[in-house]
Image 1: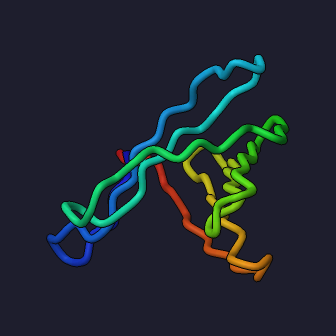
Image 2: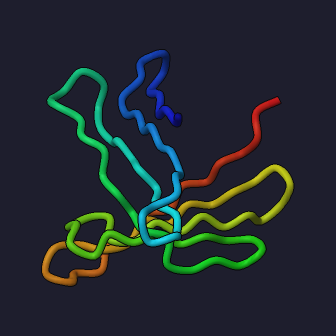
Length: 101
């Protein structure tokens, strides 16, 4: 689970789970959105590429994001890159995660 705060208020939340799929691969199930605004349904992103320090998941028919890439840069830092957009418009959002202590 991830949360984005503005001051003391949660303005965005994500819940995710990585699970085996019927093809023998992995699927990232993600629920995104603002707390208490509308119905939230999990979206499946299929694992399409891995390396020792990264994993890329894809949902090609989604407007945004089409791909989600997690890259471990150190023991305490992971970057997340969201890419895609309607009509193949390239949009990129990057989020930096630091291990809590």
